[in-house]
Length: 156
Image (cartoon, rainbow, N blue to C red; front, side, top):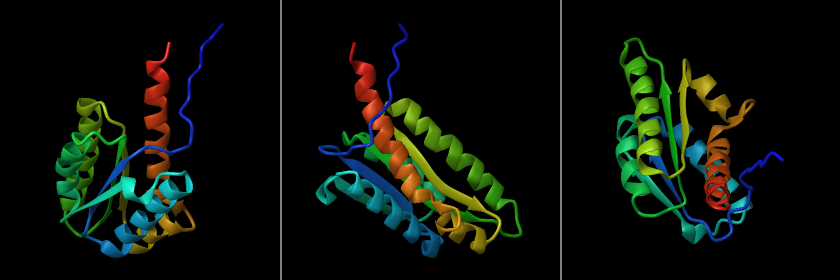
């Protein structure tokens, strides 16, 4: 018989860190609202949610690494990159994805990627709570599910 395990979507007794870049705060603020709403709706107590604000996307992985070391059940990385007229956007988007992934692999803590990379502010706002849903909510749900899956994977 095949054994299949999946993470439940309940956060009772769990703690999470949210690391958020302040740059493009109009968008990232909405992502944060979505992430907190998701966690609370899934029974994570507000006192068990720590929010760490950093200047921008480049600093998110650094703070995520420290947050993972605090013993939280999961880390949610949120931010917004909006394309400009230089290659700076591409460099940051690639590096942020790579470094957040590295934090997840190195720490053993579930780390969710909720950093939006959009061509325009309108596209970013759509992904932060309008037509395309709220990617902050989705990142929080992913962290919650993965934290529960880690526990399931420990069981025989």
